[in-house]
Length: 131
Image 1 (tube, rainbow, N blue to C red):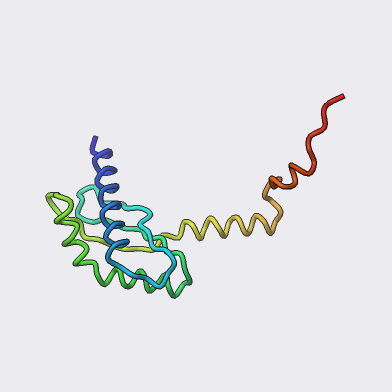
Image 2 (image 1 turned 180 degrees about the horizontal axis):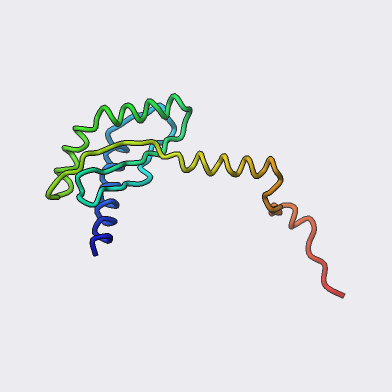
């Protein structure tokens, strides 16, 4: 039961912080989104993982901007989400997309990815009926 409550709280914080970031911040990066929120079981801390599409400098600047506005974001969150404690927000960069892209690149270099036919090549060579 407590696990489901924690999941609901994480999802609620993710939605509210994501909306505040989208609405109130301007970044040089192409896109900044909240990927995941992990709250501690006592709900006193929330680790917020940001996905930033852009250069490494843009990623670091976006993280810095959000971290510098941590207190106003916590205050706004306390007005939107009624909880016994408003969690202390900890912002981190989510590197999952970059790790996945790197794995795919390495697999391509090692020729480990399966061949995938493009829709164009499939239409040029229609399957032949069996004799």
